[in-house]
Image 1: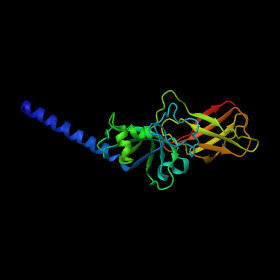
Image 2: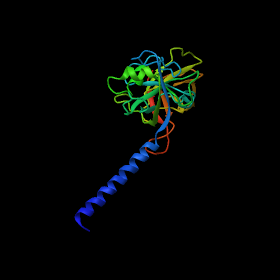
Image 3: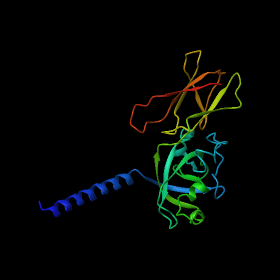
Image 4: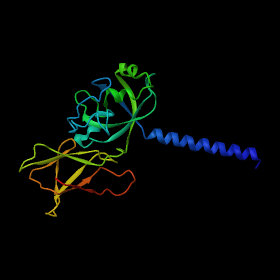
Length: 240
């Protein structure tokens, strides 16, 4: 085969593979509506439905958070999940994805898959310098996909509920890397050797109706593994 035909064949092969990659990448994206609320440069809602009231606006979430409709919030199981969102439907859209964390519930007239972002996160989807123009639109069509959470420098944290007593122990699970969500929690008093199931209380807060004394071990299970491995709980130790 002449040299130029070989080069032409290689070029066509490359273009075909690139087209397949683009098609498969776009196929992973879903479409929905995004709105925003709160201060134009703020993080929006206070995170109360997820139990994140004291950590929004700070590392690692900063202001890149969103309230989610019922299918994203998942009765609180969706708290902490991460999504890439991007908009192309408005001239001010950059078309580049940004990552947000579900931190609250979008109630009222919100659609099941609606993202109600904080003002800063909504503006982050805009071309630099046109953030206010995009926010002025109020609502845009976006594309989104779930992605692993990556909180560099942060490990899973346990924030003990201040209302604990001899008949109640509760803790909020924060900064879950990877899947982001938590679907099952078991707790063990180090001396007992017995795993006890906890119940979801509110959002990322899990509870058990008995007193617990440290050291404590938590067995945390997420919804799935990004690498396709079998789902198993991970053990974390907490010294009270």
